[in-house]
Length: 50
Image (tube, rainbow, N blue to C red):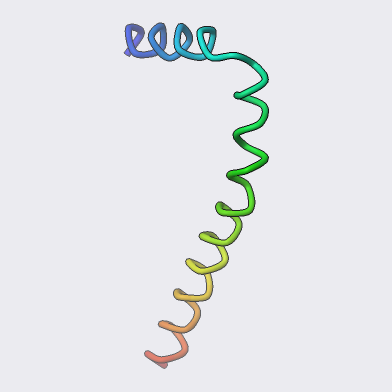
């Protein structure tokens, strides 16, 4: 576990901060869309089962 942590830290240090900061901004809308689809699917499934 510590080995993986060290590897992740090395990877984070190796990646340029600009790209690391730019990535979440692009991924956030997709994450929100996926979360909304998941919630809608669960609600529609519950509504159908009732």
